[in-house]
Length: 122
Image 1: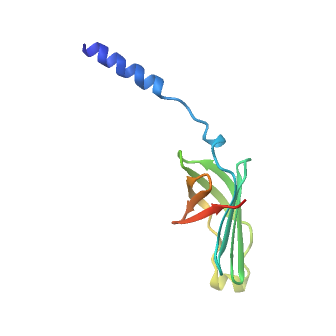
Image 2: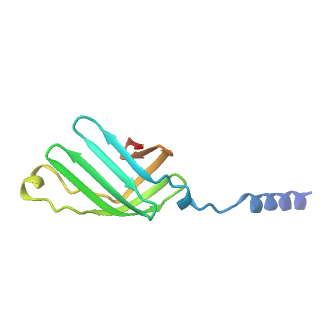
């Protein structure tokens, strides 16, 4: 009886495992968070690249890079700030850090980044 139970469990485990191509399930497109003084847009492209733009009063910062699948619900963004800060900007705003940034998919229309939600733009 032990052999039968063990064999049955092994068969169930083997047949329940399947590989999933997460790259085909990633909801690509533009995701945005906007209020009166803050605007953030994350554009996730199908080719594995992304662009992150943050606009605040007197500042616009942009970051570009590549994304990869981190887990079944998370993407890892790896990029760099493409705009050099000028002297006046550097007093008030830091460079946009998008190296090793994790984005979690709540649904195909909503993602979570740094504790807040961005909604997909039509």
